[in-house]
Amino acid sequence: MSNKTITCECGHVNPYGTEICEACGKPLQGDLESKKLLNMRYEGSARRSQTYKTTIIDKVWNFFSSVKVGIWIIVLLLVSSAIGTIFPQEMYIPPLSDPSEYYREQYGIPGQLYYDLGFHNLYGSWWYMLLIAALGLSLIVASLDRFVPLYRSLKKQRTIRHESFMKRQKYFGITKVEGEKPTLSKLKEVLQKKNYNVREEDGHLFAEKNRFSRWGPYVNHIGLILFLIGGMLRFFPGMYVDEVLWIKEGETKKIEGTEEAYYLKSDGFILETYDNNDAKFKDAIEQSGQEVVAKNYQTDAVLYKQVGDRIAGTDPELEKVKDHPIQVNKPLKFEDYAIYQVDYKLNELQSMTFTLDNKESGESFGELTVDLYNPKDEYKLDEGYRIEVMDYFPDFEFNGKGEPTTKSKVPNNPAFIFRMISPDHPDGEVAFVAIRQNLEPLGENEYKMSFQNVDTKNVSGLVVRKDNTLWILGIGGAIFMIGVIQGMYWNHRRIWIRRKEDEVWLASHTNKNWYGLKRELETITEQSDIEMPEDQSEQK
Image (cartoon, rainbow, N blue to C red; front, side, top):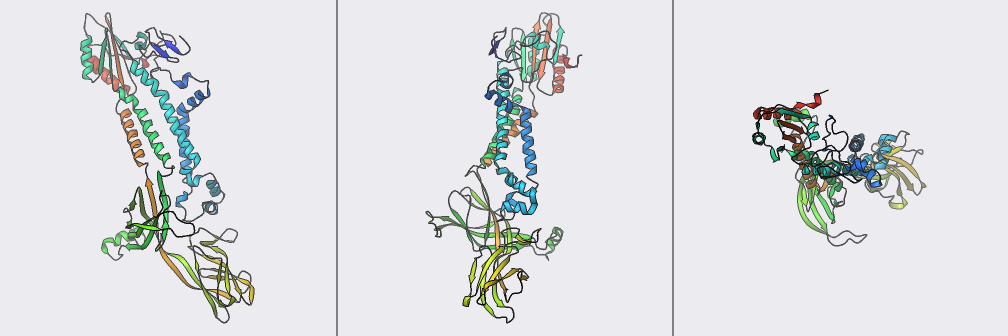
């Protein structure tokens, strides 16, 4: 014996740490006369994690080969995923909202902490990716730590097994016989009828079936590893795109996330609804609780591709690719991308028109139109009159301190603080103007901003998607299910038989389903005229 190998009396050289000889099955540790059942979980083979424990590589290997470590990683992933559902993910907050402000304003300190720790974009955060990578590494190391020695042991097992090996199996029995009966040929025939692969050597039989089921858990691990790889590849550029695109009627917008520069134009939005008076749909509409139920909504889109490089400060040169009406479940497809219709907003505010009026005389001194998505800082009117936009709140509300603020960058409820500058008021007068509100926070003014008109447009909610990882996820899922079936519906059964003078020894083992093995042994022993082996685990 050396510190690296163990040579059995049968001549087979076993790796250091082996408990049962890979070839003959002789126990290499402990008392040979012991009646304690052998630990057959990994055939008593030497696992690296239980043998080498000195170097840093050994310690890292042993850490990730631990089942407990793998379970804790899974628990951390589950807890993290659960926390990620407390508040909405970034993709589900109002469009154009600043996440750092939105979570703090909507949910206070917990929301700010939620954002700072990366839970707002959980599945793309570096630490979540690190946990997934750690789980993948744990699966690989744990599988190799067990698969390699198990495979080596099962491949090298011999027909002739050591007596102590047979005596220390769960099912073991000795039958006294007279003459040549029962013959090994009779036993071999019975076992083959039970679909066993039988080997015979020098008065010994070794029958085995369903060895492939032992690899089921490792096939599971391969499927899971592929699945994790597919999930992680989604965060590599060019592999996965899931971008939200809100586009107004008549607007041309660049499609983000594509490798080449593509643009999309909305030529119009169409909304068709069910007729509330139609008897076929009336009951269903009433049950939905909605006044209007969409029958179809679509964006008549035009896809363009940029030609050449864009010069800063100029509009890009675009080449038309195709027209396509984008509907639910009928996306616009190009290259590996697909653009889906997922939402819409009717009559979204685009601009508001005001006039500057003298409150007493009613005289108007000019008109200005404010683009609600890109307001100017100053609007010049005639005869020295001008308006300064001191502050703008697209989605106005009062915060807990009674101060004006905005819930999002979408102009759902626009409000302004205007400075009205005139020849007789060169320092300006301040007015707070919102829908149905016209306040004078610094005292009574001579002038006022009068609302005149509003311009609205329908807005399409689209999603740009590309997924080059689906085939990896599909293969991983299929392999995982094969492993589940392989390990669940079959079990590895082995029977060792030897003729020793006027005795027939029989020992048997299975990796699971001992009841099924017992029933099979009862049938085999009845047909071959030998005694049923005893269950030694029940003996005191």
